Length: 302
Ligand code: NAI
Image (tube, rainbow, N blue to C red; front, side, top):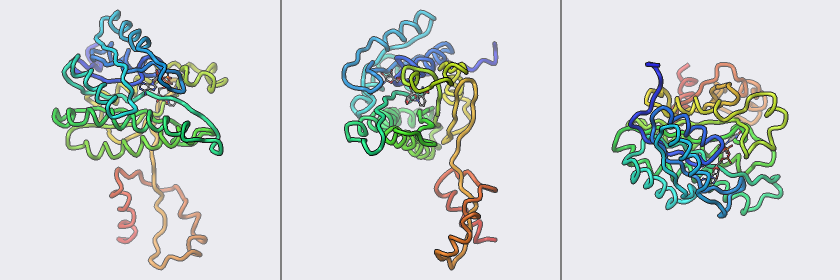
């Protein structure tokens, strides 16, 4: 088909692509001409140092069998050194990096009162810092070539909350903040950074999904099209969040209510106008902190 979206000449680094969602994104992009680095250290759902290159190698073999190009990489995303190693793999194999899909992830769930540093820190290291270090390792290359597409994987657990996941939720919402700033700093270099909030039946979620997993087709392949679109040259947006599961795709955003303005504000005025403060009618979706401040100006100019 002539209007097919393709990635010929483009190189994509996909972290945690030895299975689940990352594998699915990799198969889609490779089938449309992208050269892919399949990064995965092959550990268990909770992470740890007992992994192998096996899962990454298997996905590379699948891509090659289908006529695509890919290499495996077993570095961890969780350290600046590991992240630099991942980008080096891309440069050694393919000479450039155009797309980074930060997808690697682990879970260490526990209710908040039982949360420990051993459960909290590794989750932040893999998700939030992983997105940070891998994006940073590719950043100068993307700036120099004035081209980059970054997709960072968040989760409804952070965007909206989920019991037992303070570590994961904090990391996943942190990824939104990271991406907002990457979008602003990358704008003049044609680097677009967006967020994915996926839902799919994978080894990470098969026990958590319950009846939803059987009622709908929760295959990861139904999440990858929006990722492919955000990774494509024609991607029209940056600094946005898209949620995708079972074929449904939508946008999630952080909005601000119009609020109130009173230059003699008191505690009691807050109480008395709290409904108006909370009223979602006429909300805006600021593109930056500066734009949010603009709400104040709007009130003052009235
Ligand atoms: P998965 O467990 O199949 O995939 C995660 C992959 O990341 C694994 O292959 C694992 O070996 C790899 N990984 C873990 N730590 C790593 C590290 N330090 N360096 C490199 N690779 C590492 O799980 P799934 O579901 O495919 O998850 C992919 C992403 O999507 C994760 O970020 C997850 O938090 C997120 N997500 C998934 C949802 C779902 O419904 N499946 C829902 C919301 C978010």
